[in-house]
View 1 (cartoon, one colour):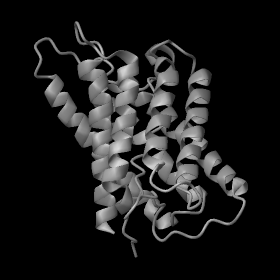
View 2 (tube, rainbow, N blue to C red; view 1 turned 60 degrees about the vertical axis):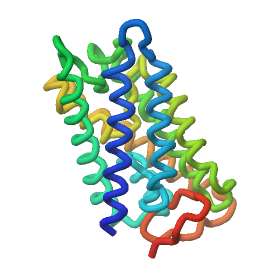
View 3 (cartoon, rainbow, N blue to C red; view 1 turned 90 degrees about the vertical axis):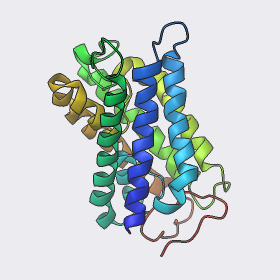
Length: 247
């Protein structure tokens, strides 16, 4: 059991360090900043790489919304939800702390939004609360739908990481201007703690909306299955060649 939670901690740490790090350190760097498209790709690459690195250990969630969606689909025992969430949030907070320490090494650094998510005045495009909530629910729904479909025993083996990573890239390309893209409560929590009170006060939305979208995706996945999915022990498994069977 501890191996699964360590894998979730490491995977979420890498997602926040790589994804948010690309936004804080590289997005607007003079002369060769990577821009929104580069940040979107960075988030997708973090998930893709960690799925192949540790997905066979924990299922490769790295996201409280994914965990609740996998549970809603019937592939995860309820007893794993809180431990997964704790590991994911702690990984996100430590990654944010290290990112802050790196960014603070540049003269004149100010945290600002620190790659945090927001609505209204804190939305990159100043989108309303309703627009941001709808965006997060819908984007999380499709993200979790891709995950559940790509990791189904009837999906082509070995390609789940690519599908999941590319879907997260696409989601960021669409929604960075709206909310700065959460679809992941842990990813939202870590940076917000360093950005300050205004972003912390808006965290409720970036827990509630992704979890709502993920729950809907889990329930819809049950209805879409042509045949009952086999029960997976302990967690949802990423279907990778040579992955060990956990007991």
